[in-house]
Figure 1 (tube, rainbow, N blue to C red):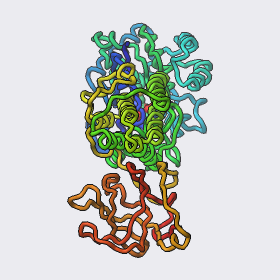
Figure 2 (cartoon, helix red, strand yellow):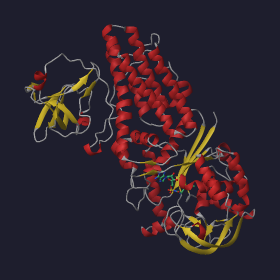
Figure 3 (cartoon, rainbow, N blue to C red):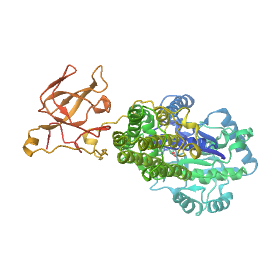
Figure 4 (tube, rainbow, N blue to C red):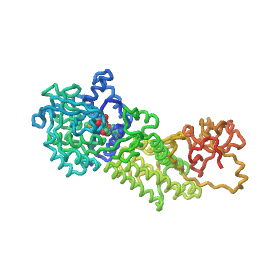
Length: 634
Ligand code: MSP
């Protein structure tokens, strides 16, 4: 147990934030939740970087005062973090008095110490990046970072002696391999910026006013990056209020996108050296989420709004996707189709189905009470081993910030347990009256899920409790540490399960989107022998479900309206305990269309849909890829 201080970049409130910003913040949130769970004294900071020329111009263009403009956007950012259940301890705004006052004290101190001096700046400025560039650094006359136009500026400025500290910084980087991660970013910083030599940095501007004024020369405003970077210590009270600062500084992790690693590993550590403060333990520069067509940007009009996604797919589904899809560090492509596949495969089919089967079988075969295990066989021990591996994979993965790897080790346990059920076949044990073996198998299923819930706590914010409730457990999985609470054998005896709604309803892909091959659970149908002529009498066709609803007064029966391509039919199907009606709409199913119509519960059923069942589980028989309604089935 120790302390853990982690930060996100403070975001520019120049526009509403998009999925890329949510990505950094959700990853940081998972790490914060994990460190709290393992008992670290954790402090998680995020905020808004509100000054600078870019924001001033955006506000003017919107016909608003800079303060009015940022206030509105920051309110939206706070709402977004609350929607995503971000568990930050503080949200710092650089327009707050507590911050401005402290930035002024820092600037004054560096000036008095001789590390800031007055001179004249002549060079280029990129407003979107708020960065100074030398003529020789430009690429075809444009900003080497973002490719936008730069402006020539010439003004009286204060300068910060970066050059004085370059040698010390290089030495620190070389002797602390964990300081800049991933290592490729370290090499880039050393080779492209530090080795060629650092120039002193311009740290004030006079040609616009939206910023913190230099205390002893008020026609200057403090350069926005100096203003912004110091948020990591001003939020802790530095220099005048030592409480939080002494407790949490130095930061354990600054999580940033790769494009701002340079500011965090060159300018920021040198500011800290000049202030005689310890450096952060690690700056991690992660990759970008990009879209098929390239960078996410307002000007391209391809911004993905996380609020819309949460609304459409649910909070934990969006969090899961962000944390799981891309190996953390690398660039990754965002696509809604990949998000839907993750939901359907990992969350609905694997995790949701595991919970559903487990609770249903405990109800059916054990009267709803989780039995005590009666000795383990090698098959069970494989699940126990996988649960240990999942716990270790979580700790090792998050220690190395391999967030996706950590999550996949948990989902390997889920997958293993599903396969275990197929092999252990509790329904057969029940039929054969093998009560002891059945007890062990049912316990193993429930215990695997209990452990899964504890291990998912850092990542998902609703699902662990939902699993907990359906398993009938008391208390809160959030309160359990993985090393003690996610250890095999902790399931309290005599617990009664409580069946609930499906964890993640399956999402139907439109045919054009349904490229990914869906996993289907194995079934073992046994059919009596028939002749080919007998088989040919059956008219089987593909139908698409247009409407589905429950038939009043029964759990089992659904009424479906399907189309066969031109012709609509009404079907009554006994699948109500296995499928939510809404999850069926739009799906292609297989229907016996020449079956003699029959009235069931007063509803005329004009055909029968095909489903596979092993006596316990039931799965619709569906074409493996979209073939269109009306297609024949042979
Ligand atoms: N205000 C500065 C940071 C100051 S920190 C002292 C800034 N703000 S920003 O609003 O532009 O946010 C940049 C950060 O948002 C990136 O570093 C990254 O963490 C996140 N992302 C923005 N777009 C992103 C993607 N498309 N993909 C991944 N992360 C993205 O820079």
